[in-house]
Length: 229
Image: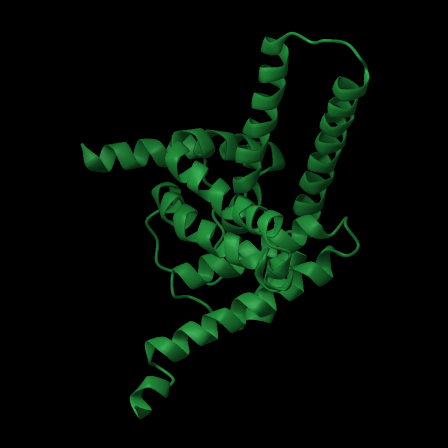
C-alpha cells in the first residue's frame, strides 16, 4: 500500500501533473487579464509543456516567465494581429446575419471554411514561437504549412481545444473544472501531438535548455526525407 504513495509511483506522478496543470491554468488566466499579454502567456505555457513532453522540465513558474519575457514582443504583435482578424471576422458575421440579404450558399460556405482554416493555423502559432526562433512572417507561414501537412493531428488538436466548450454547453456543473483546467488541459493534450511533429524540423543537436532554433519547415522536411531515403 505504501508503494502507491511513493513520490515515483504512477499515482503520485499523476497527481503532480494535475497540480502542474492547475498552476499553469491559473498563471495563464492571470496573465491574460490585460488581454494584450495573452499571446506571451500562451507562448510561455507551450514552452513549459514542450519541456514536459521531453522530460526536460524544471521549475514550472520560472520556465513560464522565462519564455513570457523572451518572446513578449513577437507574441504580442502576433496576438494583436490575431485579435484584428477576429474582430474583422466577427463584424462580417454580424453583417451577414443582420443585413437581411440572402447570400449565396457557396459564399457562406467559403466564409465558414476560411474561419475554420484560420483556427487550425492559429493552434500552431504560439507553440512554434515557443520552440523555434523565427520571424513573425515565418512563424505564421510555418504554422499554415505544418497545420495542413499534419491534418489528422491538427483536427485532433482542435477537438482537444473544443472539449471544454462542448462540456460546458451540456453541463453547467463543469464550469469549475473548466475554470481550473479549461486552458491548460487541452493545451497539454495538444503538446503531446505537436511535440512529435516538431522533432521532424529540429536539427540533430544535443538537448539544450533554451529550446530555440531557427529552422524553416521546408529545410526540416528535406532533412527528414533525406534520412528516410
